Structure formats: C-alpha cells, structure tokens
Image 1 (cartoon, rainbow, N blue to C red):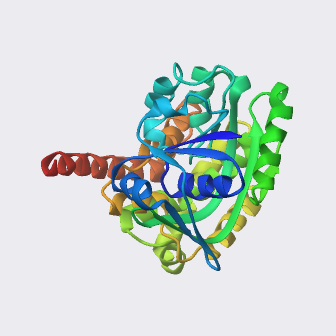
Image 2 (tube, one colour):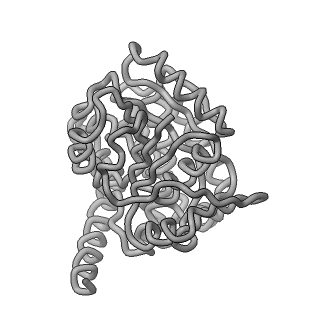
Length: 311
C-alpha cells in the first residue's frame, strides 16, 4: 500500500517506519532538522530491545503524496484544518484519510473536508519521542484501535487493520471508534495540561497529593461532558482505569509537556478549549479545565512571541 505520513513527528515516524519495514511504500512529510537528518541518514527507531533504520521518501512537499492510497494524519491538532485543505486538491479522490492524533475533534474537521466515507480514526497507544533529529525512541506498550466513521466503510477499514497487522503492529478494529477515542482523550486531558503547566511527569503527578487531586478534578469534569454527549462511561471504573494506566506510564513526559519544553505550540484548543465549548453548550461547569485553558493559552502566546524574536 502507498502510505503518506502527514506530520512525521515521534508518532508518525514510528508507525511509518514499521509500515515501511513491513513492505509498504511510505512517504514521510516532515520539516526542520528532523527532516534534514532523515534525508541524510534515514529514520532510526530505537525500541526497548531492538533498533533499526529505514530509508524512504522524506520530504516537505505535500505534492509528493499525490499517489498515496492512505494518509495518516499525525500533525498537531492546531494544524489539522490548514493541512487538510492543502492536501484536498492534491490527493486522489479515492485516497483514505486516518487521524492518529490526540483529541476528539479532528474527526469532525477531516470528515467535513474529505467526506465521512473516506475518513477513519485511530486510538493510538504509544510512548515515543524524538530524542535527536532523525532518531525516535519508543518504550512500553504499542497498540492501535482503528474504526470507521460510517458503517458503509467497515470493509475498507478492516483491510487497513489487516495491513497494519501484517506489518507487525498490534492493531484491532472497532465499530465504535469515537467512544474509544473519548476514553483515550480522558486519560490525556487528565495528565497532559497539568504536566505542561507544572513540567511534572505522570509519576510526579501521581505522587504529589495536591497535583493528584487536581488531576482527579479535571478527569471528573471531562467525564461529565463525555457522559452528557452520549459516551457510555462508568465514572468510578473509568477514573480507576485512568489512574491505573497512569501508574504504568509513571516516567512518561506527556506530549503537551514535550511540546512546551521544545518551544512548540501546545494543543490547548483541541484539548481544553474543545472540552470547554462542549461544556458551555451543555450548561456544565468545568472550572479546573477553564483555569488550565487560560494558563496554557497564555504560555502559548508567550512562546509564540519568543519564537518571533528568535527568528
């Protein structure tokens, strides 16, 4: 299969490398020093018990994706709409689009542009980071859950799942992907914003009683929103699962914290902003999430100003 990775950061690079190694023809759309090093030396993946390097097409030109049969959207949620509109006139009309991004709002954006029958979603379970340009490190569990947004596309979705499985990726199909994405989103919103504000790892949050209490407040607020929009959730069981999963990722620096530390814009709108807007429409109070939103939005603005000064 001809596959395009749109936004070859840590996640996109990792799965793209596995797919390339598994026999697919993968084109990586990237930028900056990471792109430069991949073009020079290939993409190196470091796993806990293995490492390998793939040579492929590494580019910053979206036109090189024109023959792709499947596009994996891995850009930051802030860039989803702009990138999708840029790709729409380039891609074949029968190319499929799958979001592997954080959040639960990218599906809405992509389906409006590409159509519901071409759009798939994926809940991505991975701990990975770019440890130096051209090199991605992965540790812990790796798993994907993929689903269609329209039942009419279930056969095509199953074919994508099979392709990923044959590439050695632990992949499952679900007929209720949005519920799966919301469950993952609840984990992310519990730990990501708080870790980005405090620069604490998940383990630090779990070990500090005040931070843990704050994380629990965020989780409960987000669960109330999820429940009101029709996501089936057992409150007590869900919060127990989220914090148990947190214990297994104690040393992990969340993606939002990684973005802050590397001087990138954090996905504030797709996480806190989206939840706030849903809560407002449902007349639900989410004071902790609202506080995080104001703090993180300010930090994003300050980082943007700093980047302009440097450039």
